[in-house]
Image 1 (spheres, helix red, strand yellow):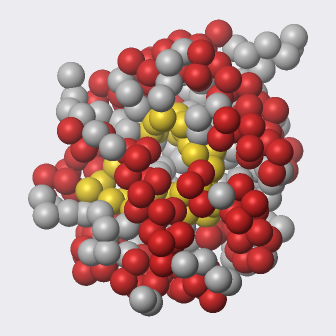
Image 2 (cartoon, one colour; image 1 turned 120 degrees about the vertical axis):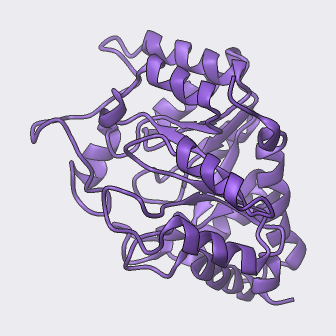
Image 3 (cartoon, one colour; image 1 turned 180 degrees about the vertical axis):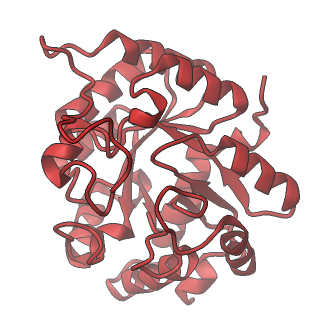
Length: 298
């Protein structure tokens, strides 16, 4: 079976599209058309600067035959960082995923810099050092517990964003204690995270899925990794714990649906079976998002 056929019923839970504050490869209507032609089941639209609830709600209304659009909120400076009020607003409107800080995280800035490509998004000032979930005593900030409690109450997904590995593991532990049932460690093989296998195993033991994004393999990603490295990590951890996404939408990369199919074919050439790939692009994302399609604003 060719990789393109694997897109039937598949999910890509990490896509960037127009409108955005930087230029993207496709707008939402053209992305939806490509995904529908491929028979995809669902797409998550991520914006680093604002909630995507409104645009995803609209797309789901005008495209009732699918694919299903899932929405998110990333806790970066434009929404006030670790801002429980912004989280409550997004969740009450129907947000599916709350991402902890991405380009605004202190760890991101230490690894990839502030306001630079591939994440050249608005920051308060040039001296901005970023957001940590830990206070000066290395304890998790009180806002995080409030946010995690709301994620749990709405049965939404916790996305770990671009935090450091110690922050991610601390957040997952607290998330589990707060009753969060859906957790996703974002793009572990991208250099901004670079989570080793021991930490990935600990994350899965806490109940999280591990995301590998094909953006990590491209020249657009600082310190890109090889497909062989990504595949080796997946094999060692086990496909039952992994969700594959594209993290595409950059103008220098293929359009998301096309790029997703291309790299799935590359993984086939690395020896992953049709069943392996289906688990990572259909079964696991469906488990993570199961029931979210029925969630409506309160």
